[in-house]
Image 1 (cartoon, helix red, strand yellow):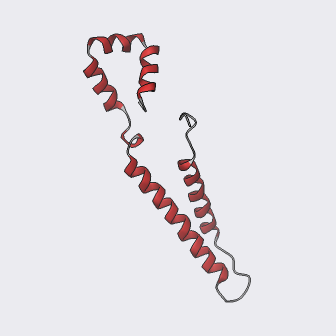
Image 2 (cartoon, helix red, strand yellow):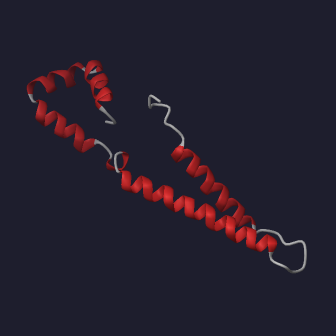
Image 3 (spheres, helix red, strand yellow):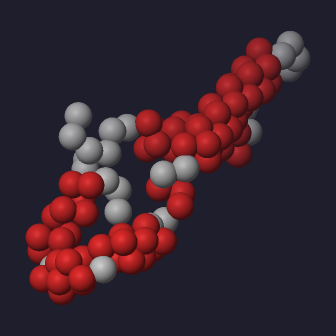
Length: 105
């Protein structure tokens, strides 16, 4: 469950859940809370992942820039593994920071 609106929609759509909720509301709500994934509401993990991916993007950009600008025999090429690592981290950040299509914003 993400929020109370989702709970209300689920109760409205499921007559068995509605009956169980009427008979034992505390037990049913505890059962539903235990079934919710903990990572969905854990802001520390979310922030940690965002900071880690941001640091990865900055590190790859600095390393790739250093390789490309380092004086030496031209042309210097940035290794493809750095390009793919930076691209993947940017894509993951965009996916995490984009608003959810389920949220009302």
